[in-house]
Image (tube, each protein chain N blue to C red):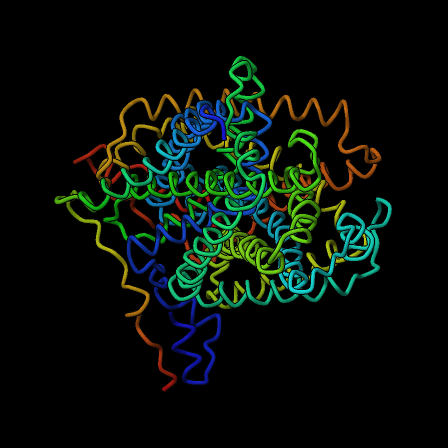
Length: 55
Length: 543
């Protein structure tokens, strides 16, 4: 490979894969907010949805 | 889910009983990782493998990385966040989310996105069926010495443009298999269907493709291929078409602006981080594109080396030509070709399938919400109708041409128009940008500034508007692919008209449960009274 092509290959990898690594690290450090506005309760989880019985 | 509980008891619950019950709890991903994997699975599709490498090569090589990254940051990620904000705040698939955001008239935009997804699902399945067939063909290199003739004459049995009902069993059977798998995944629901499929197929795809790339790098001529892809052509950056190519690639690659990310975000719990996982999804998608670029061009370098020609003399560097003609030819010449072929077509199948299920989920979710269908009812009814239409249109001798034309119009006219309409109607006409920005920042750890509003409300519609108008002019003046005018009108513009008719009809039908009984959270303006939606129910014909 030519030096120029290698530089641009490395540049593409560093910028794009680096962006992925940076965003994963950012997410790991700040997975969610510590405080949310009041309210905002969720529906039941789908796996604890009420079961309808036939009798 | 209720239907599972009912089924386990061997009973059915009538529609009336379902109606009388409280709304079903909204399905959810099991957590942040599940959502991220599903969203990456949706974004990483056929275009990452067969479109990006050729587009980058033709638009400046190494220099393309500059417009590409600028497009990612200024348009791709901002529009992705816009989709997330709409779906998460208004907790619905596209029709319900837009309905709650702007009322009955805006619900049309949601249905337009649903019909786009429906049409795309019809032909996307066919391409996955081809990839699945070629995965099998790889083992005995069934395409022989002339893959081009094999594809069109032997496999697809392509005839003249027209509408034929002469079915090709070699396409029909894998197509039916793909539809059955799709319906099965949709019927299993968000967590146990979509998320599980992505948890299985996405890691498998990455591993298979990594093995393929490493193998490709050790082929003779691989270095020349990478030289061709990465050597920058700086003059290209002065060409507006190169910039449009970068924005198009990012836009079509990220699964944005046609309902998928709205629907996926609606299955997150209310207190869910939106923007930071969004960054992971966007960069993961681009990372796979770079990986695909390396793999595809190392392989093309080998092919050029074998033929004793330069890369720029090769043909078929993107799309169907690259995947189903050029790659089979390369596989035939390669030591260990069958394994390489199986890896390539296996990757194509998995990448396509994880995108396909996201496209069809938009349709399924739209029908579930509007017509009070259970997850399984919607999957079987929507999937069944789509499967029949798909088989009628795309497993016949005219399938390839129909697919090519429908794809061109659904993407370049349908999706682009949908994105422009979203920006103009939501951000300009209804002026809901500040509310959506506040929503993103109230739940996310990566904060978006005013610049996000500028990018989504000013830059995006300008770039996309240029793309749309120039494409309409080109298609009107030059036609498409030398095909007869009547055929383009029937299948190209015809599919857009069919989408619009579907939109208005679906919008006019009655909701089974009032979509407007809903209060967005958190309230806007912050601290103020629960605002904005919960519009008056009489406006919608809800029962």
